[in-house]
Structure formats: structure tokens, C-alpha cells
Image 1 (tube, rainbow, N blue to C red):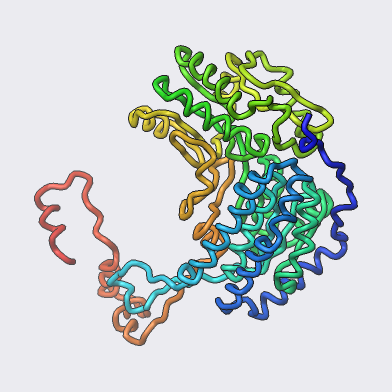
Image 2: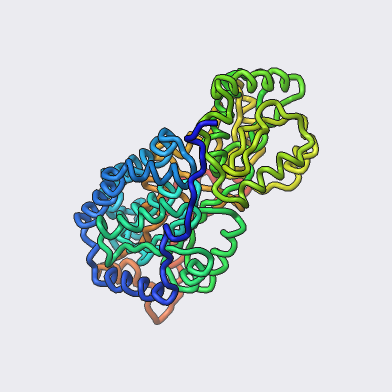
Length: 475
């Protein structure tokens, strides 16, 4: 057994919890600084964004080590799927947010042009970001970057389930960022409850649907808008004519990164019976390529805690499906080998009957008609053809769920717009008293006609020649 797979001992003392009686004051402090207008200038936002980038850029090795301790991650997973992604995302915001922040004009309307209408993007106030354990850096810090770019103050609650990563973020935040505007609160249920009892201007939560409901209920007490990045069961539909090797290779990779602890990881593969054997054989071949010395000797991320391990282990022990490959587990390491099952018919039936809209849906096919059939008859946060888990890395594309898999969008401009208030403005010149003079008393029949002229013409349900001719008249 490789020593790199040994699970390091974690101690509660690694992460210092924030005293509950200090949490309200933290919120009030950042609120006061926000109200002072310190973050209003775009140049100061840009400076803070770059400092946030350097928080990670200057400390790569420390974050790699923290990821290894908390999650047993290989360096490639810690960098490619966490650190590199967050630096890429923050730099994308850094290079573009000044353009996104510019006021916009609504489409020209002859009836309202005189008001010089404009839409200005302004900060909401103080944003609370509650991060997850599975991608604690990428998921949480992307929203912190969005908060900075939009001019919002921000309080970040990191996950207590990854204490070394959270402790490192807590240590570095005051060294790189303006602590009057950006703070970290650490803790578990008690501390999170104290945060949710307070009023915020926007709450971002990434995690399970069950906790998402708790966050939503707490936010509703203050009418606080939320962005929920949740999970769910992500199905895969396979065309029997798909390439079994390519399909197996991409599916096994997507399911095994971060030990399957990925909100977009595929959960169920639906494939016609006649193609099942070919895909099963391809999984066996790919499994041997991925783990030539056996999965137990490979560096595979471990489950985050005993609860997660026991849940997955229980699913494996109770399944009525046939194990195609994998199936081993190690209790001491909270480690479960990547496992492929087939012929669990009841599980497939239960899935189709009970599952809400997934965060992601995948289809493997080269047939555009097959793809369209699946797309048009399903709903999901994202839809990907011939791959899995790649959608979150596509710059300029939104990422978010639908229904119980979440609501709201993130990444790039979508994060910027999510955390901005689109504040319409209008400036009424004196000429509007002439153009809209009908609005002033005393009311007359003539003014009723003038007001009615502002309404658009509604076409007839069954237009004839007369209606066609009237459509050419301007009034």
C-alpha cells in the first residue's frame, strides 16, 4: 500500500472557530466600511482583485499541501481543478469587470427617449458567501472575486470539513485583502446559524439541497436574495451507437475526480441493453489503464468524513447490481475504489420516478437527433454532449442549477450580474410636460385619447385585409 494514500490525522485545533458573539460586529464593521464608499472606485476594486489572485499565486505549495491533508488530493487535482481554475476565473474578472460595470442604455423607445434612460450596475451591499468542502477554494473564492468586482463588501464562511484549507485562507485573508471590507468567519452549525440570523444583501450558498432549504428559509425572514449552487443526481444517456471506449474513459474520469465529490459528477448511466456489454468491457479496459497497479495503490482522493464514507459504502453494500470493476474500500483511509455497477434495474426505476431536475445532464452520441430528443424532453442546469464535468471551465458560459439543483448563475460576467443591482435611472426634461401633458388634471376626453395613443396596437386574432392595412399606418 502506497504511503501517499495514508490519511493524515486531523485535529480540531487546526481551525480556530470565530466566537459567536463577535459575528454580528464583523458584519456591522464591513457594513460601515461599505457605506463609507471605499470600494466605489473601480481602481480600488482592481487592486483588491489582484491581491486576491496573489493570495493563491504566492502560496500554491501551501494550498497543495492543505488539499492533500484534508482530501488526500494528488497535486494534479489540487492545481488543475482548484487553484488553476480559481486564478483563471479571478483573472478573467480582473481583465473584464471594468467593461461589465459600465452603464447600459435600454433599447430605444420613441415614447421614453426624452427621459435619457440608463441602467447602472451598483453593489447590493454586504454579501455572505458560504463555501463547500468539495471545491472549497474554487467555488467560494470565485464569488468573493465577484463581490470585489461589483463593489460589495463580503463575509466568507469556509467549510469546517476541510480545516487545513480553511485555516490557510483565514490566515492569508488579512495579509492580502482589506479587512475592513472582507472578512472570514469560521465554525460549524452554531456559527453558520448565527450568520444566517443576520440581515445580508445577498447570500451565496454552495452545498446540498437539504442545507440549501435552511439557507433559503433564513434568507426569507429578511427578504434577502440568494444564489444556491446545489447538487443532485446527474444522469447520462448513451446512444447504443456511441464509441464505448471514449464514453467509458470520459465517464470514469468525471466520476473519480475528487472521489466523486463533485456536484456535476455523473451518477447513473442509461444505455440500451444491447450496448451494455460493450460499455462494461470498455470500463474494465479503461480501469486498468487508469490504475495499472490497482486502485488501492493509486493516489485517489478520500471521502471528506466518516459520514460521507459510510453513505457511499452503504450504497455499495446494498446494491443489487453486478460489480463491473472496483468495489474495494478502506475504512481507515475513508477510501473507496472507483466502482462501476450494472443491471441495478430497481435503482434506475427509483431514479426516474423520484429525482428532481439535475444540475447536469450528459448524453453520449454522434447523432444530433438523439441529442435533441434527450435535450427537448428533459430539464437540467447544464447539458453536455460527449463529455462530463467540463462545463464549469468554459469561460463566458453560465453555471447554475434549476429547481432543486439550485438557482442563480456564477462565473465571469454571470457572477458580476448576480451580485449587482441593476439600478434604472431617468432624467425628465421640461419638454416632457408637453409630450406627456395629458397626465395632469383636469382630465378631459381629449387627454384620454392622448393617453390611449401611448398603448401599442394589439393585432387581431384572425387578421383580415383591413387589419393588414392598419398595420402599415403609424398611428
